[in-house]
Image (cartoon, rainbow, N blue to C red; front, side, top):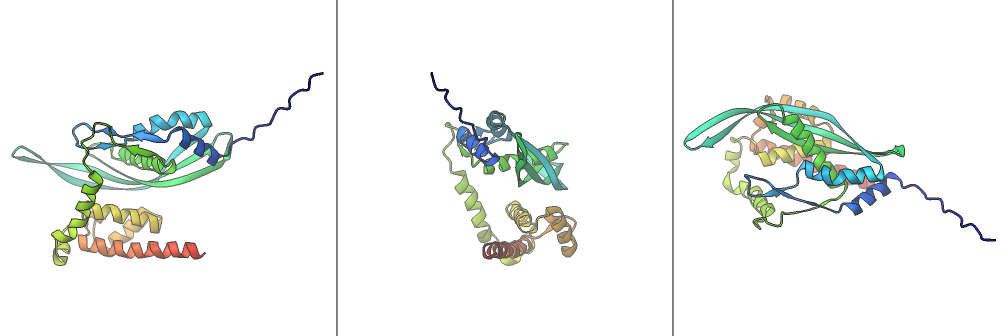
Length: 246
């Protein structure tokens, strides 16, 4: 009489194990060369196109929520030939929450928070901000490796950006920094630090506008922005030390 083989009961994967499987299936996302620009980049659709089949395969559901956002209207100048044109653009900074849920066990879930910025002359600024925030939440959650297009121009743009960041102190004296508007680089760093140390971007910005007696955070001077950045950097370090000691 033949013995029946015992069936080994499969233990279902938990959410983190499923995420690990997805990371193994999708280790790399190719950058897309942007037409009209001299660099390549990973777009939101590049990430979702690669990731969606694996999410479906392992039964991981993803949801997106906008926790808060701030909006500004900014005049952007463009040069065409000898003519200069000015056009109003909407600028949106949004705090995005992306949740990952195990469809087989909906209680098994975790969330990540990200920040996105969108600029548009019509009604697409909020959509761009959400897409930007979701894209980076996914890139960091799944630790995706990204690479340049094989036909890139071999320019080290990271180095180029770093040079621009480090030369700003050489271009302006301290007194001059008191009289120029905050740079995009400092503004981005400031908003990131606010999110990391204060939690609520919108609430801290409202407090900042009141204390500085300005209408928009972009009205800060470069010098004042750097002083606030220094304070928040120290606060971030203190919070890190408290967490480690706790």
